[in-house]
Amino acid sequence: MCRPPPTLGTVAPTMRFKSVEGRWVIAATVLGSGIAFLDGSVVTTALPEIRNTFGAGLTGQQWVVSGYLLTLGSLLVVGGSLGDRFGRCKMFVIGLAGFAITSMLCGIAPSIEVLIGARIAQGIAAALLVPGSLSILSSVFHPDDRAAAIGAWSGLAGAATAIGPFLGGWLIDAVSWRWIFLINLPLGAAAIVIARRWVPETRSGDRKAPIDVSGAITLSLGLAGIVYALIEGPAGGWPTAAVVAMIVGLISLAAFAVIEARSTAPMVPLSLFRSRNFAGANAATFVVWGAIGAVFFLLTLRLQLDLGYSALEAGAATLPVTVLMMAFAARSGQVAQRIGTRLPMTIGPLVAALAFALFTRIRPGDSYLTDVFPAILVFGGGLVITVAPLTATVLAAVDDQRSGISSAINNAVARVASLLSIAVLPALSGIADEPAGTLGAGYARAMWICAGLSVFGGAICYATIRSLPVTGRRLSAAD
Picture 1 (tube, one colour):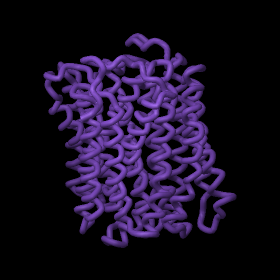
Picture 2 (spheres, rainbow, N blue to C red):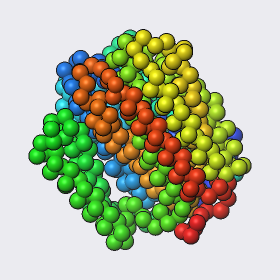
Picture 3 (cartoon, one colour):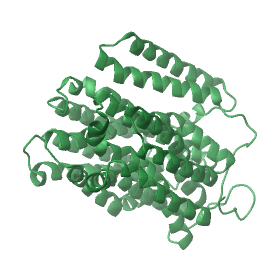
Picture 4 (cartoon, rainbow, N blue to C red):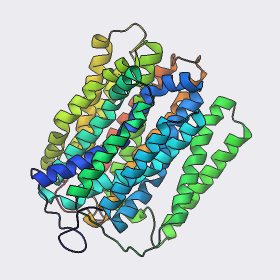
């Protein structure tokens, strides 16, 4: 299915960043993970049109976003484990094929219910390909070039997330919102072709070890119950079903923790969190990416619903973030390789918090150049400083044999954080109580909450991250 390794077992990490082979591997992983990240952001731009097509309210729109994040976040770790065990490139390609098929189902959905179901299935496929993309880089690139490769991946994949609203806006205005899903078919096919030609197969772990099915079930059930309660509860005055879902969700998550602690082959090895850097980076990821996910969701809606932007205009508004990520993310990874990751991981979230504070000033009638654009530039700068060093810290905190599972855990933390923030913030900030078709005063309150979360994330990094170069020794449990 993919290039065979030069020897049996795990490929020695000797690939160079500037080699032809290295550039094609980065292209495959960026293109594959990019379409998954893109679908996490592009859909937000289409929500007003999806609402008009199906007559969906705010709750239905939340589920179009949250259904995807739910299965993606809860199964990412399973996908990472399968890649480590059966082949990272193999799982990556299988995930790409599944993502293309489910994207087609989203594109032809006849109702909001079918669309939500297809989005849930799409998240399952994405859970196979996303952790594989990053673990491939960690397992094949030489340690001296790993930070640069991760930086390039972070910048280009992050750019895919940021360009999503722009691309989606163009497709929505020019053709139909359905094409934001259908475009994944040729992109997925291209990624599969490149991966099969250039990406060497790598794996680690015992292929006969049992898969942690009970862990996957309890994690998925726990997240599903809590998200259902947080979305449906405030909108319906907390009916019995929402209360029961919350209780079931909390019990399931508690059971998940117990199962992982006792399992001989856990889906989430709790021993990884003995590393101070690994635990700190994931705690910061949860806080900061919760804020970022909510900001992308709410800002795009604010521009369209309250400022009257078209889908294309709303998407183009965030394009500077894409430009900054593509231009400077790889450089950010190289700087972190020299000076260590603690400083950029502390400063980056603070810069993002400043951007979120500036976003509170965006009101109907404001000018893009004087009110929106400056905040977008600051936001992009915060992402450039933060993304590559944080990702490199997570991978540097574990050995190469567990790169897939560590990448999956970090990605899962980020997606779950976005999932929960999108579910909680509309009710917490008062947006859910505003008239249909507007975010009202609740928008500014939500942005202030996101700014506070981002500041907290920077504080976590300062307190927990050891400033070791990412190419240094792997951290032990005592670090």
